[in-house]
Length: 260
Image 1 (cartoon, rainbow, N blue to C red):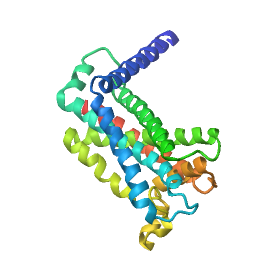
Image 2: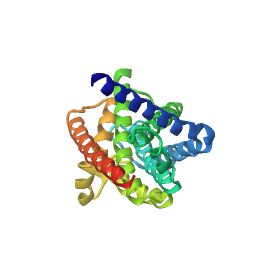
Image 3: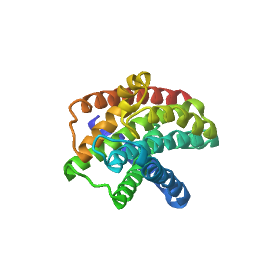
């Protein structure tokens, strides 16, 4: 019995790795996907740093140091929408049915997609850090805290990948998923502390922004990168992320099982 269970787990992991490799090979064979996914966040960083930066007042005075941690979180959140689009493509083209006709774990496609997209997000994250440092950004609270911040950012991407997976499985059409997967992110991203201090917002918006999961995560990441107190933001950020990951992973898996 133990041998059978162990063998099943081994083959399930093997199937997940094969699906992960499939997702990564797509970026190698179609490098434009990776190139264009990095252009947008670089443009956001340059525009806000050099066009709006001079008009925005920040607590420590250096807007670039304030902006880069927020842009990193924003980049990963937007990058997570690729999970839903990819799953919708597989469903609409019949690839999902083909995979399920093979002797492979049913969970492999979903897990492999999220892992490959997280790996892509890691590459984009490192690239954005390099761009930020080229512009003058520096980690000011030690490399250990910097690594912890990057891990938190990637974890945020995984959470939003589960949300995107649910949207992709629910909508199914790739073009519609692309719109549905981003339209709700824009107000959530801009009504947060990514680009400006929350205190500069109107009173009614401050209430929403202060308790946004993105604001809690950005404040934590910013404190780890440039120094600050994380006691008031780390706990709520983790609670938000665990809650969202739990809810949408369950919803996505159930919908995936019904859809396929």
